[in-house]
Length: 228
Ligand code: HEC
Image (cartoon, helix red, strand yellow):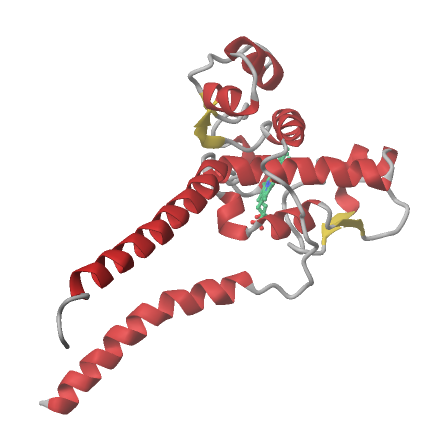
């Protein structure tokens, strides 16, 4: 009886721990990741990241859980501005941020569907995406040809080096800025109310601490005259 209970219990514990170990395994990469050091409170960086995202990523990728008007509200644009800046006036403010590529084209061109990027920052982490975007290198040094690119994070990736022009023509600081702004925007869309949650969290903890103090004082008051 006891042993069957124990074995069942260990099964339950194993079932609870297993997914965690899978996540931990998925999170370990064989190269060292660079720190993205992005800041989702920096609205200017988010605005730049959004425009880069529209210009350099949405040809292939969607952010299907975001709407243009939500981005406008959070980043300080009007509805007209957001569709102008991010969709060249071709979308409505209420539209989801869907890729400009037609279904199936990615698969036929790259052999794989370009993944939706709404939740990518939560799935892979900011540092991963930052290192991935900056991880393109020329296999034969000095030969700047599309087929000559590889990526140290995702070897043999089918995503082209879309930031090639920045990598080639900008200063290292500008290139760093562009990639950091992009990661910042991806971090933001993965959880648009993160800043609000952080700010509220402190207030809730402060409230609970005050409440703890009050309830403690109340308890002392109630028990003051009781002999125990
Ligand atoms: C020309 C099409 C194209 C463009 C433009 C493009 N991507 Fe991709 N992207 C892909 C494809 C295809 C994959 C799948 C790659 C693979 O699994 O090898 C991918 C995968 C990714 C991944 C997931 C990598 C992983 O580890 O699974 C991220 C993150 C990403 N892209 C970010 C971006 C960002 C940010 C931009 C804009 C700067 C961008 N992509 C522009 C085609 C594109």
